Each structure stands twice: as structure tokens, then as C-alpha cells.
Length: 283
Ligand code: GUN
Image (cartoon, rainbow, N blue to C red; front, side, top):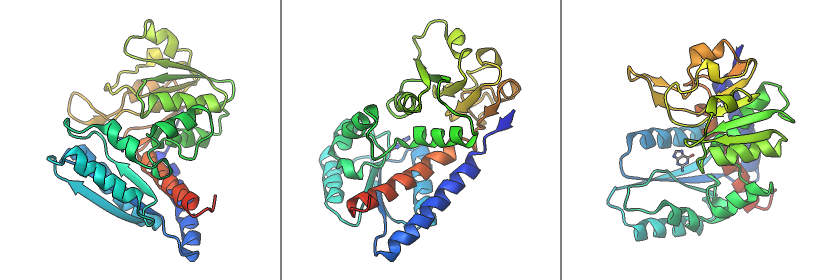
């Protein structure tokens, strides 16, 4: 069994982005990312801080809009419209979840698809469905990079994605399908779950339940990707996979932390670079 080092793969993506950014800057173009955060959700604050840090690291311009929880839909919409019209801002990201009185769909729909670096807009989602996309959803795209890092060809493999969220599960299944895997999605209503997961050559767990995936649910020699960010019974950070028992059975596994997590922000950097190139007719 080998552990997939998400920090190392993430670093190599960022180095690639930083190199390309340096070349763009010689042409007078600096990729710019605007990040909007509403309210004071502590996990979101950490994510947003890490996004700003990553921008600095690769040489982007970034702006953070930390709005109070009392922000109205009209105020939020007006900010997105303003950022849509700014030529120095190539990517717009509104950190989710939003406070309950705000409609995330309305905000996502307002972001100009050419600046949709999260790939959450229905136009981006549709483009992924037909395999003709500009922006890949960050977490699934990061997972594909991790799978590629193993050197295993996805073609013809049986892949099982546990979880059907719009952010991870559904786009993950699409990306695996584009690479010719035979894909199955499981969810909370799935019957005989372990029978299905035991057939997976590639198993992606994105369910949000601490240590839910146990060794008896995993095929010998499988690649196991853990998207979970959960807390165990002692309050310690852990994933959806029971790492210690599953690690003994699989060929490759991602740890938590240090697996999928570091990849998501690196892919956001990649998307922002793509956005800057597209908006300057360089792609
Ligand atoms: N909240 C959790 N993950 C994400 C993400 O990838 N993008 C945004 N905008 N919000 C999130």
C-alpha cells in the first residue's frame, strides 16, 4: 500500500501555475481572484484565508470581501455584478454555505460563467456534462490529479463514488466517466452498499461520516480517495474512511489531512489562471 501525498501533488500544481503566471506577467497580465465570504462560519474563514495565501504564493492579485451576516441579497448581488464588470478580476468565488436568509443559487447564477472559477454555474455544470468545459470543479479535478499521480490508468476500471452532492459526487462521477471508467454513484438510500463498494477498483468517499468506510467494504488492491473532513469520537480531524484498517487492504489511499484537502485550492489557482488567459484571448 502507498499513501498518496496530496501536499506534494498540490505543490507541483502550484509550481506549474506560478511559472505560467510569471510568463503572463511579462505580458502585463496578472490573474485576479475575488473571494466573497458572508458571516462568520469558522471553517469558511479558514478556507478563505488559505485561498488568499495560495494567491499570494502563485503571484495572483486577490481581493477578499468579508461581509457581515446581515448582508442582504441585493447587496450581495450588487457586489457580484460589480466584480463581473471589473477587468482586473478574472475569477469570482462566493464561499458557501451562505447564511440561511441568502439564496446561494441566485448568487451562483449571477456570476459571469467566464469568471466562474468554482464551476458551480449551471452553464459550467452543463459544459462538464458534455465534456466541453473551461473550468473543472476544484475538488473533483484535484482528485483526478491524485489518481493520475498513482500512474494507474482509469480506462475500463470500475469506479464507485459515494455521495451525490453537486460540489463533489456528481461532477466526480462525470470526470471519471470522461476518462472511461465505469461509474456508479451511491447515496444514503442505496441498498446493499458494501456489495457495491467492494467491486470498486477506484473508491471515492464523499459522504461526511467519520470513518464510515471500513475494510470489509473495500476491494483488495483498490485506490481509495477520502474526501471527508470529519471529527472522530475524540474530536480529532479524520476522514470518511477508517484509514488504519483500509490502508492494509488497498493499493493507494489518501490520508486526512494531507490528501484531497490541499488539492482543492491548487485547482482553484489553476482555474483562475485559465480565466485570466481566456479573458485575455490567450487560450
Ligand atoms: N464551501 C466548501 N467547499 C467550497 C468550494 O469549493 N467553493 C465554495 N465557493 N464554497 C465551498
